[in-house]
Image (cartoon, rainbow, N blue to C red; front, side, top):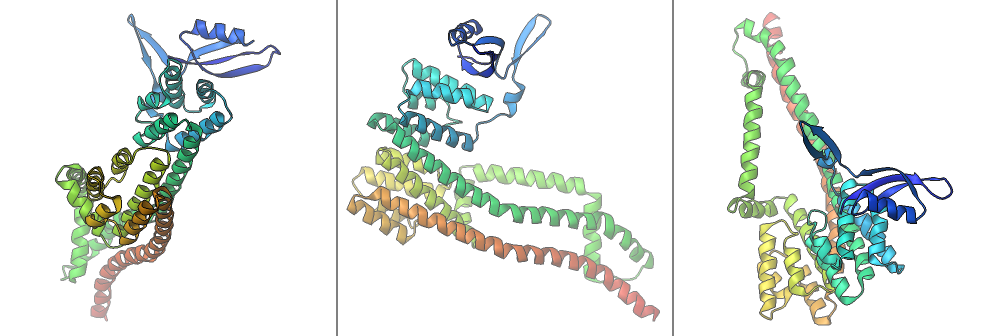
Length: 410
């Protein structure tokens, strides 16, 4: 069902505007007239009609760049939880969310979900038709809430989960900003020195015809290669990056790369902690929402993004189907720390697995934040030292021949 943006006047002559879904503009005008709104302007949202040579087609320019962000999903989930907890019918609550959504794509998505719900489809099935906006985890939690009759509680729990994931993602991304900026600035400065400054200075050494130190010869060689073949270097760099990404996504390359990443000094342990924290948080949230353990493990498996850990979780899922415990199989994989597996084992024996997984998630998320702060503090002087070493090598390689010339003149 299309979504329309309207402007009009209410019974008191006050200007009103909003978004509504309707079968046609005529139906929408009639519905608004019943509500006491006289429509002055009406247009289908995010569409522009272009005509030419007898052809008419719809071009959605804004829609090409519009996307539904995780933050938008978290906000609408919180609002939907508030409305349903207040006793407002689901279809009416979705209609309120359509009216106040700021993203055109999100408005259209919510309008389609509302239409499906009005036709008798469950909310989970309606959301499942939009996988780019609502993940399997989201859909299955909503389905569990509908089945158990506690949708409002599940939506609140889902909101807390989305907020915690957003905070963790923000911390990781924020910690990577400084190193990336420093690396880019250092590369630009070094490139400018090699392409602009060094060639002008080394012209003096070429006129002398004197044997130069090895470091100066190396500097001149690198400067000439960079200045004359920069386009080739960029092309090779782009092709290498493209080839590496293809290999990393391939069936043979991805497991090897994922295994290598987990063994990298400092970075590997942090990535493992992030994955384990996500595993514990997600599994605990799904189980607390009433999702069966096998289905929950299947969903969690796809969120880890590391083939080594994915295989460990899949093996645990198969073992659970055969009657074994989660903790025993995770311990056999060797990919989960003993502390985690023992805490999970205690939770299974005590019948409080959801709470124990929550404790694991909190502990590991705090540990990730601490290690990221330490890593950032350590990388700042290392990056400065690396940049200083490169610039120092360039300056030293230029000054050495000059000093030798002064000694000869003396």
